[in-house]
Length: 175
Picture (cartoon, rainbow, N blue to C red):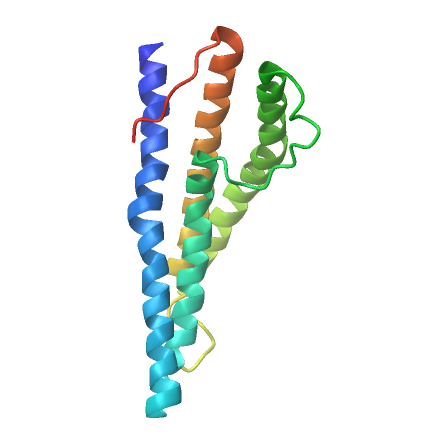
């Protein structure tokens, strides 16, 4: 049991620290590049071809890598109007079933799809069809990584819910 609890805390720490120290800083990088482009385009009068492309890649990385972090905090959209009046055990059981059915199915379908998507991009040395001609494969590699992070966080959340349903124990987050 102690090994399971240690593993669940390890999963939580992965998404917590990636979200706090990587994903949040990507947002600041996004803002800095957007500000740079606005200043150089509107004030100095010299737009850059690379900024729009880099902004799109960074936004995608921010969105995809934040999936597991968002699930760690249970901040994905949830309609709990029907379950709010049910006992806590029933709420947790329904939450577990819904997460497995929807997020689990998404992860199950997307991991091999995203892996193939990134692998084809690496194999062909895919580049953007723009004047900047940047490599696309690093950005496409972030997609399966983000989906895997979501999947391991789902595994941790479902395991914690099963632990609660079977033993009545909850694990406090110690980050």
